[in-house]
Image (cartoon, rainbow, N blue to C red):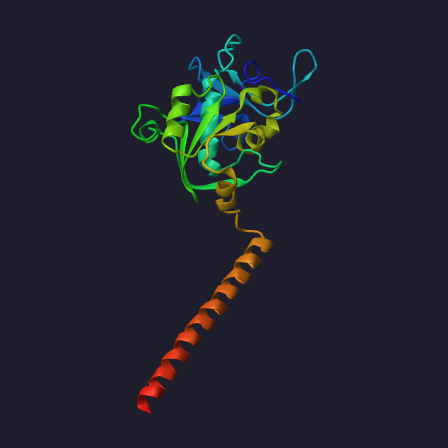
Length: 246
């Protein structure tokens, strides 16, 4: 079932200054204090299947404790949740190239205001990441697009950057929200000097058996090459030594 996130039901709330999805609520954390990002009123998680007054099935969602039905929960929280998710998961997928996407993994993701300045400019990105190819800047397009001046700055200063378009997140199944943000939503490079070279450098995730075997094989080949080179040098040294002695 598709849900409109801008209207009711409310699927995101604030807890300890962080955005929280209704999908993360369970019996262990449902009694914590959650607030509305738009009106700051207390929200109550309603999880599990229940019936509405009209007999339809009510999906899990947050509701205002006061009974306020005029507030939709705000749009800014969706943007905030997207950047928080990227920081937590430490990866996104690249824009498609020849119908394929690459998984880009990050060692660090910054999203606090003091860490988001882009170079020496007055611009701020939505997330600044450290990847295997260096600094990587992420822009999230939900309600406002990346301004032309910022795009020009990325390009003029050769800053690797991508724009993730989540405007249609309101049409996504609730259970697919995270995958939509990280992988399935439309995205494009803002600046990329050579897409094929950059994507070739992106390291694939390590953990499956195939990747490990490839690493072992590569390591073995390197060891053999190194041994041959060392043996050649030793042979040359030994021959030169015997000539000197004779």
